[in-house]
Image 1 (cartoon, helix red, strand yellow):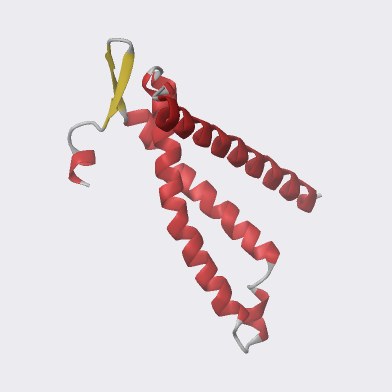
Image 2 (tube, rainbow, N blue to C red; image 1 turned 120 degrees about the vertical axis):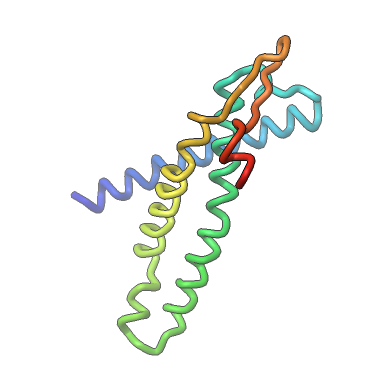
Length: 133
C-alpha cells in the first residue's frame, strides 16, 4: 500500500517537473527566438519563473552531492554501506531534495516584488536582506 502511494507520488512529481521543464523551454524559445517575453506580461508568471529558476539552481548541487554519496556507498566494502546505494534509497533522496528545495524557496514568490511598467511587469528583489545575500 505504502509502496503504491510512493510510486504514484513519484510519477506525479516527475510529470509536474516535465511539464514545468517544457514550459521553461518554450518560454526561452519565445524570448530568444521571437523576442516575446510572456513572464513580463503577468505577475504570476514572473514570480513562478523566478521560483522555478532558483529551485533548479539549488537542486543541481544537491543532486551532485547525492550522487557522490551514492558512489561512496556503492564502492564501500561494508555490506551495511552498500545497502544505502540502491534505486529505492536514491529515489527517496531525490524526492526529499526536491521537497526541501521547494520548501526552502517558497519565500521567493511570496516576497518577490513586481511593478507594472506600462504593459509589462518588472520583477525585482525587495530592498534589504535580498540585496545583502
